[in-house]
Image 1 (cartoon, rainbow, N blue to C red):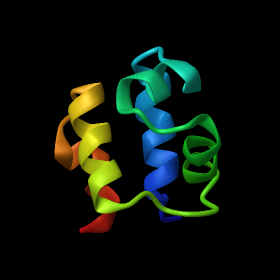
Image 2: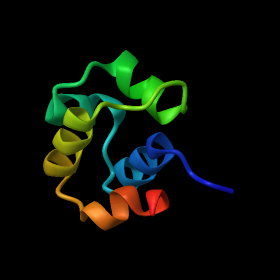
Image 3: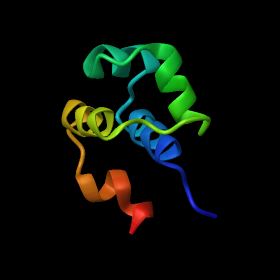
Image 4: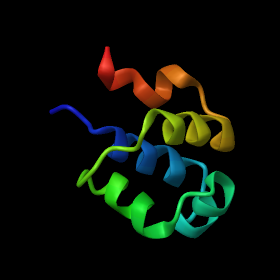
Length: 68
C-alpha cells in the first residue's frame, strides 16, 4: 500500500512527539490544512512541503521516500 505525503507527515509528526497544533506553529500552516493533508484529502504545495521539512528537521528522503 502506498502512503500519501500526508500520512508520512503524520508519522513523522507523531515520531517527533508533536501535536497538530505544535506542528502548525512551527510551519505556519493552519490546523485545518494540516488535518486535510494528514487525512489525504489534499496534498500540500511544494512550498509547504519545504517548510515542513525545515521546521521538523527531518531528512528529505524520509519525508518523501514513497515518491521514488
